[in-house]
Image 1: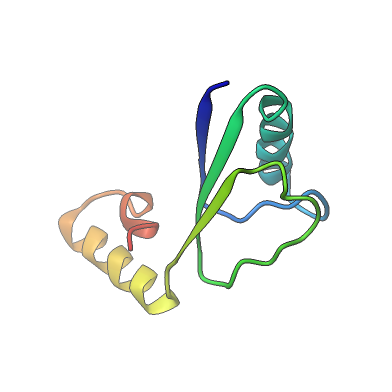
Image 2: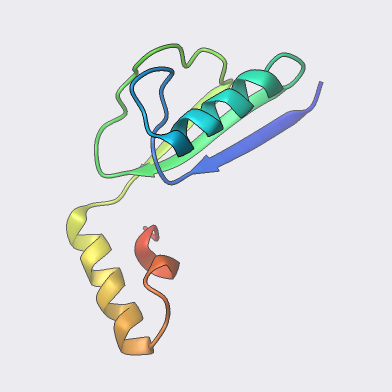
Length: 90
């Protein structure tokens, strides 16, 4: 049994989500049959436990405030770098 870390920019759930979240959840569901899955994501909200997230061994959420995201985007613009690079920095 191996340990696998899944990193995502959004919290996932087993119901009511977008296509990318569903894809990540389905991959994690498949991999959890023979492996231990840890999940890490960034969010500006508190973790909402929707659906069945019991397939993950550990869940870690790094909260990023709206002000912090705006500041990081401004820094990227000044450095002439892509905005996505610093959007999820803490």
